[in-house]
Length: 315
Image (cartoon, rainbow, N blue to C red; front, top):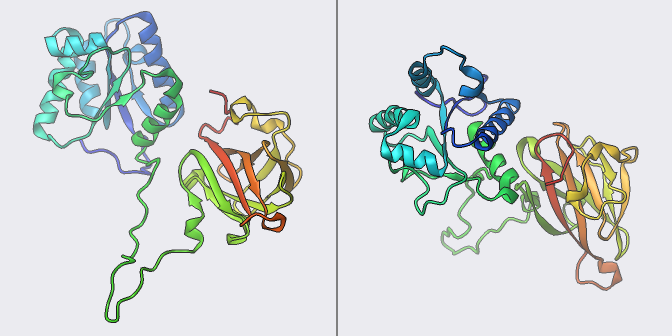
């Protein structure tokens, strides 16, 4: 079955293939599936789709053949059962292997590695596939963001449009044409650190992309403070009073958003909200001012975009 194109009106339909290792593992799978449903993914899961008396093989066949994508939760027991041909995992492997034989280039199956100590963490029939690793709990949110983007066909790091070759020459030879336009003042990632000269581009620097885009704007004040300014494309901004780290912020809506200009001291955090309802937190790390003897006027800030719209940046 073909995958749905990005931005389809129909939600992606996903079947979860896993082994019932322990109650804790079943709960982990249920939690992941529930969050995917909350984020617009139609999940097929035995824990809520099967009842007493249900035909288990029929459930597997219909679920696997009717899904756009399949999450194969590759724990140690799952890999052993798939390789050894045991239980429901082996039955699902048989169906999936047949689909792979018909289209070896298909990327319907997404291996998800968790609770896995194998040197080769995937079953043999999936050994050539790229997988997503949830083994490190400290990186759970980053891995989940990667997974939900993939299921919806939205890249975290979308491919930029192809530009012109700056080194293409015609007689007489021309110097490379390098861009000094507004496109220099963009960082599309969900998190990162930015350093830019706020005397350029009207003080604007865009972080994020698509629904997660935030056109921040800055203006000089002193070597210890800088102005954060409301700009077109934002709903509101606030100073995160009393917060020393972005991960301390549990509720972005708790801060005053009544002003379009905020004076932010070095080390302080600004909360921004865009029209799509997503939140951005920026922490001012360094300030330079040309009027105070620095070679240029720069602000350095670290940032994180909250993709859940909850306004929480805690990890």
